Amino acid sequence: MPERYQVAAASDLKQPGSRVISECGGVEIAVFRTQTGYHAVANHCVHQGGPLCEGGLSGVTRLDDDRKTLRYHSEKRAIVCPWHGWTFDIETGRNIADPDYSVPTYSVEIEDGMVFVRV
Amino acid sequence: MCFWENHEIMAQRAETRRSVRDVEIVVDADAHFQEVPDFFHAYIDDEYHAVKEFYRGPNRSLFTDWPLGNDGVTPSFTWTHQDPEDRFGFHLSFDACDVAGLLDEHGIDHGIISGTAGLFANGWQDERRVRGMLNGYNNWLADHLDDYDTLHGLLLISGHEPPRTAELIDDYAGDDSFVGVSWGSHCLTLPPGHPRYDPIYEATQANDLPLCMHSVSGDGGATFPHQFNGSHTATEVHAWNHPFGHWWNISSLVFGGVPERYPELDFVFQEAGIGYAPYLMRRLDHAYHEFGYDIKDITTPPSVSFERSFNFTTQPLGHTASNPEHIAWLIDLLGPDSVMYSADLPHPDFDTPEELFDRINRFLDPDEVDAIMGGNAVNVFGL
Image 1 (cartoon, rainbow over the protein chains, first blue to last red):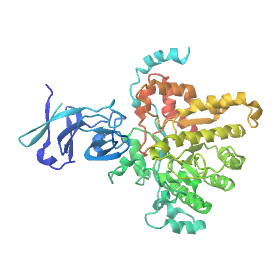
Image 2: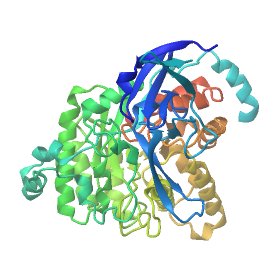
Image 3: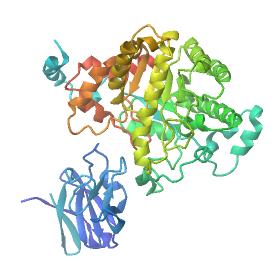
């Protein structure tokens, strides 16, 4: 059973787009609050080890399936590494451009007004 | 024993050196300040009074002085524009304090410092403004580096007026702040093998300085390799512009006989990585032997110039994850003595020392790894 770590009070993550970064069992983990809930991601880019979760939280530009319309999806669920711009979906951990690359994600629990991460 | 048979033995030897921290000295052979006129306009001599007054204006940027600008191409490195306090990117200025801090943060002992915007000077149409900018920037750089033992400057030049540039090199070469000459090597109206540039090579060699040719991208310009009509994105332009510019420049230098005429002059090609270089070397050798009737200015195969005179900095390493061993192969093809680690800090496509060290440590001799990570730069720049 993964160990549970308290990382913040839920009141610290009221606003969509807010985040906290904590050390949990020797691993730096960021917890993001979005429109859809809470998402925990390792603060370590698999490219060159940059502090991934210190970068901007962004929407994503994608080509529609018809390959004609370039559309901006404004839901901010893409974390952009501040070192080299590698970008990952904070819900799945998958790299936006190449899903062969991913960063670890963790389950988040809310209990008694506190935010916990299981590592 | 060939490289391929030998590398397992080397891997065993390398097991005792597991960290880049075990390397004797790490040198970023292509670090940058990001100069803005606010830094240096006060250093422009009165001889260039009008230029000085021009740059005294608020919010002046050398980038806005580019001849044709970047219109119509997507902006580059957009993730660096998301946070006004972001420490990397092109939207902020970086001086010695900033860059020294970044080098220290990444475990780099010394940085060889070029400018950023000034590297585009070849594309400026107005020679008078170029003279004033070079004067102010180089004066400022010399003064600014005095307090930093880990930062070593390159004297910024352009290709506009080679005899005048030679005088500039002679004037500044005695200043210990400068360990080489920096030439933004793109946007030349004639390629660098043309005899018009001989005064630059002569002065650089006479002052025992290496000549660093630094590719640039994203600028508009009238001449190859800067003509990018039809390339719609900054990503596309950035990808081909750097190595193709060096292809043209190196081919011109070699077949123009520059390394043979100036045998003591070391060249350092920056910002395009090393992947293109071994293929170019072999291709030029092939041309030398196949088109002998057309070879007028050189007496030895181009690979001799590569071995004796040319050095290449490693950034960008490219996407190394698929097979790290390939980086070691490239270095072996080019020659470990010709390769220098570079980070390119603070620019947002920088490589950490680990990104190179971790790839090559298992496959190259420890002495070669030490040389690549810093020893070659120490020798060439006389640190």
